Image 1 (cartoon, rainbow, N blue to C red):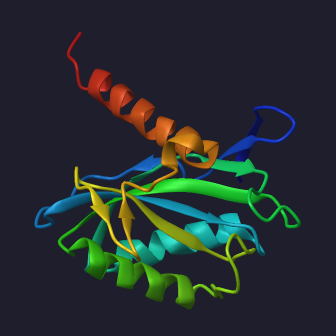
Image 2 (cartoon, helix red, strand yellow):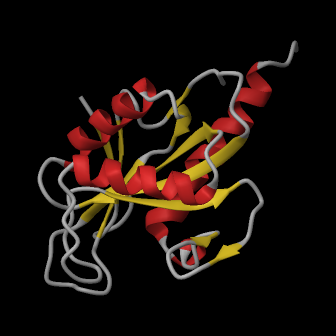
Length: 174
């Protein structure tokens, strides 16, 4: 059962068994990547949990940790339901373009249909950060160009930072 905390009249945070969560890092992956995850069609939190297990089974990535889930209003196209968003940090040996192709296949597998910009969607995956790389092409922008202006990213990303600090202090012998 998820726990809910209301931030204001438009934003709520949800915590459940996989969000937030930190796992031990597997060896053999070259890069650390932060993905933005969101959606607003159907049972998005259930879909996020399915995505969590789908990624955990993939030999191409290793799930490291996840942030809290944030419910927030849409932007751009406003005539749609609120979104639920989180972040997932992964490790991978895929190069950025290969990871993007994998992400597109995962979105399609989870029912994503691309109809127009900012349309309602079952699952939206974005590469927010890929190591410290800076990439600007027609199909890929890393870091994500609007990450710092979106609470749908900054609040779940902030929960990752809190996990890191908490883990650092838990390991001290005081």
